[in-house]
Image 1: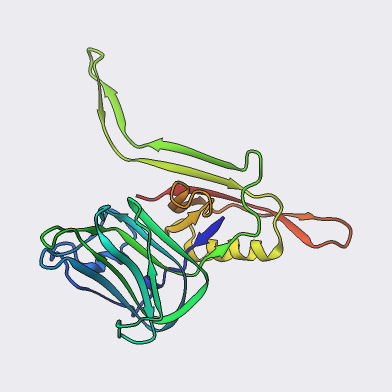
Image 2: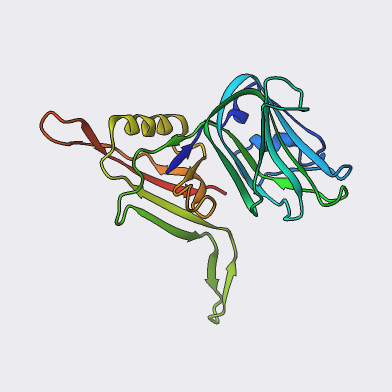
Length: 257
């Protein structure tokens, strides 16, 4: 299970530019926490790029492209990283495998570069493409994932409102369905608990982050953009006389729209 909450593109001072953009949906929308407030390309070129200048080298281990509408026929989809704003032979030139709506790539170790680009080529220059959020940053791989059995619960939550007329005719205001995600860990170490505390301190119940529950077997089906529903307490357990401390911990999360 992987947690990602230190998005480097959101840090103050980061400069974000694009090869093209729609005037009403600029590239600056990528740092808006709502995935529905998208960046949209222009309609002048087929080869598109979004570039990030972090100001200094920053650790990037995971890349997530969320709420995009790239098409299966689009090509040259890559994430690139480099020490300078020069892209002839960047130090990182990683192909990103196409997947509808969300794409991701995980590096085995941190990549430390100041400059990053996401590039792709549309099927036709006159078409547009939307992207809701991009994550570029480190990740924490939990030493222990959800307890089994019963440590993971995913519940769809329909925000639609249904009512009836005086004659009994039902009607609905259809709204989004989001997932509620509950994770109960088996007893975890001090080290994992410190990471969960860091996540709670940084995001509270106010800032969304990414959680990938089974990144190897379900890289997209169990990848969620969430906020904490509440900050859960932690309970100390002892592994045995004189043994290392173990903690009970939970995450109660709501998918963020």
